[in-house]
Image 1 (cartoon, rainbow, N blue to C red):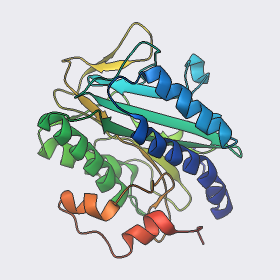
Image 2 (image 1 turned 180 degrees about the vertical axis):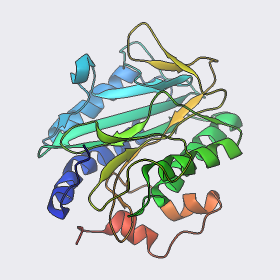
Image 3 (image 1 turned 180 degrees about the horizontal axis):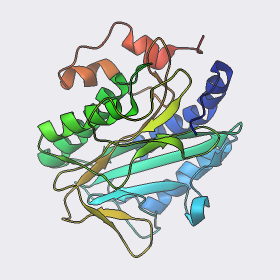
Image 4 (image 1 turned 90 degrees about the horizontal axis):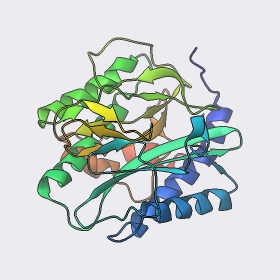
Length: 280
C-alpha cells in the first residue's frame, strides 16, 4: 500500500532529510586518500546523533554501521571498516540514512578521491545527471516508471548500464515503503504519481555490464565484471507545483547539472528545489 503524506507530515520529514544532507556535505570535505571508511562512519554517526537523530541503517536487518560506503566496483551496501583506506583515484559512494521525529531521510552521493580517471568522472557525471532527469519526471499524474525511463535513457545513451537487482523506494515512517522505483522503463507503467507520495530515487549505474553479485558478507553488492559503479540518491516529495527535493544540499546547483545534461532548467527550479519553506 502506498502511503501519501499530508503537507504537515512532509514538512516534518524535512528534519531527517536535512540531517542526511548536512552529513553528506560534511563528509565531502573529509574524503581524502588515506582516510578509512570506518573513520567516515564514526564521523557520520556522531553528526547524526548530535542533531538529535538516530542512524537509520545501523541495526536495520542486522546491518552493522551508520553508513554504506562502496568503493569502485562496489555498487551499494559496502560495510565500513577501520582498515579499509581510500586511495587516490578511487570513487566512493556514501549512502546516509537518519531517523528524526518518526520519519526517515535517505540520500547518497558518489565522491571522487583526489584526481580520478576520466572514465570514472564521466560515470559519476552521467549518474548524477540521470538522477536529476528522474527528478524532473516526478509530476502529479505521471507514472512511477516514468522516473526509471528517464534514468535508463540517459545512462544508456552514454554507454553505461543500469543495475536491475536494486531499486529506489517509497519512504516515510519506514525506510522502505511502496512503491518500488526501478531505474529503468518503459514509461507509463506502475502506480500513478500522486500529491503527497515521497520516493527515494537512486540510480545505480555501472561503467560496464549491469549484472551484480553480493559478497560473502551478505551485504556488499559488486559488479560481476568488476567495472566501476556510481550511486546518487535524493528523497523527493510529489507536489502539484513540482518535485520537492527534501535532501537537497547547499553545495548542489540543479540548474548547472541540468544544463550539462542538455536540459534547460525550468523557471524557478532552484527556488522550488532548494528554498521552499513548506508545502501549501
